Amino acid sequence: MNKLQEWGFSKDWWRNQRGEFWVIGQTVLSIGFILLPVVRVATLPFAVRLGLTLGLGLIGLSLGIGGLLNLGNNLTPLPHPKEDSQLVTTGVYGWVRHPIYSSVIFLALAYAAWQMSLSHGLGAIALFIFFDRKAAEEEQWLSEKFKDYPTYRQAVKKLIPLLY
Image (cartoon, rainbow, N blue to C red; front, side, top):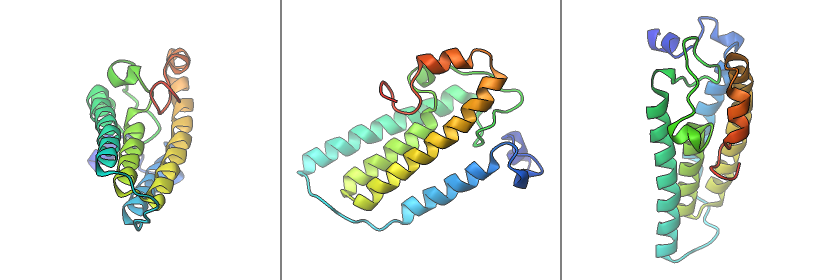
């Protein structure tokens, strides 16, 4: 229970004051993605499939690991920033505002590409939509907490480096 409070969860988590329901939704969606049946829709040469999978996977791993390392003690699964948090804009946060969310999306796409699975491709789209909405709520709180956030928001893409 102490770790949950360190991460910013409130004792009244069921009131969703810090976005606790987003964490529950993220957990359910992630488990659902894992449990999806593989529905193959196409075949690609092994080398192409491998290259696509490795490319997406390396991007996902790089963003995730970089995001975790750059956040340090600011890390929380909640969209609400911790009370003692600092705004991080360096490292992978100079490429994308939500690299850990991006990491999950890219890794889901890598798995969908490896399996050539329509169901997992659609699952990756669902994850993208979910994290886009979670990030939107998070950005409201970040804008309230950090006066520099709106400027950072204009300069750095949200979830997909160089694109979105």
